[in-house]
Length: 512
Image (cartoon, rainbow, N blue to C red; front, side, top):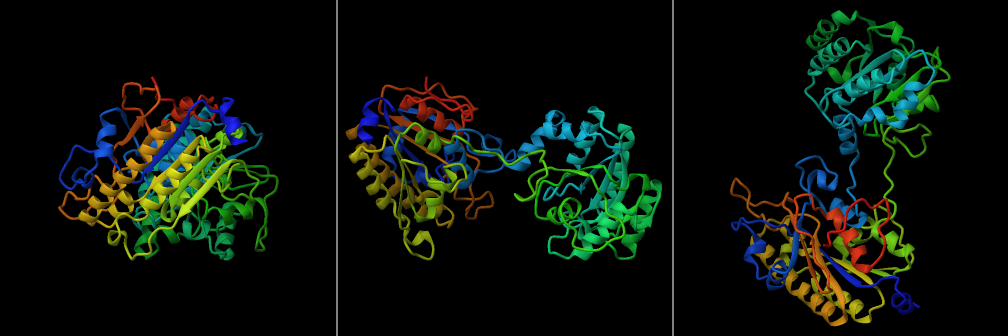
């Protein structure tokens, strides 16, 4: 059955993909374990059909300048698109002002209501929320001609200095004034509004401040002086009890609420209280309100999200399955999740026609004690699969350069790279013998930088570009450009196999 599918053109070429973990490209030779290793196979491939790919920062959906990692690397390689982390998607929407086109924000802004409320943590801590998001939403709501807007300022002091809140309060007061839109209605510490430990008495205090105005009444022009007085008395931002600046801005029946924290855990209880179920008694309960949240705070919540969870639909593995093309994924224990769960778009699903093989990683305290890990086992299984030819797509991960690189032991990492190269050679030979197009790349850098700027061991990932080499077939790469990234690997594979590229896969084929 498998052979018939292949012969009748479901895939015009067979492809083998190797993902080396932690193999970056660097011209620096000092502390470069890859350079010091004997790597005749990779050296030879680099002189043939070869380009380099970006594997860090925005190129893989991480914040700008942030080093790549194994999970994100395999996710991008397998998805064939840049898979943006929530914070990056959100930051880009505000930076590029595309937030004003957000369909869920437009719906909230156009809803017939007397007032619209923004509720969330306002600081530059960037762990749960960000002041820039509050400002961006205010600006967008004004552009959308939304109803009068009131800001409910949850003060931080935990991910920021304990008494830095007055600076953010002053900033928001000035921003609203300059924008001529929006007012701060209440201020309260995250200790109350953002509890996550079922201490409902804290949420009750926040709720009654937001709805009934129970708290200390302070004029907006006196806010900074008032909070500084609280500091002097020993109360810091996190523990500020509700401060009511504008009673007209309290939450009432029929109002629209937007919670703008991007992290879920500390938003669940207060959203549950407003939108689903209260766990306390109170004198006044608001009705007929609408709630929109920045991200999905719980799969059980019915509220629309400005940034819903991404669907990594039609990853390479899923698309091959839809085309009835059998596939083979192999790794040792340490990286098994990466060639399955992460490569398949963050899904546990094993697709029809997908065979998975795991070989055991050695049981040693740290991998510098056995730097080859089980590269031999991975190579053996891959060569067997290639020889059988039942899977037009086969792929594997080689773990040693990354896992041994993390130990910081230079000589062991050199050995890891030498041995990995040797086993790559075995697979390359099998591909040449059995007519597989051979592709090799990496998920991120590591082993090419084993020495820190301070002179000690460097054990972290890097921001290096990674190789993308090809052997076999009549295909050639485009001339290299800086924007080539690991999200382009899957579209290239589909092109080699003669298969269409699904619209959701927004990477590009790198074939000339």
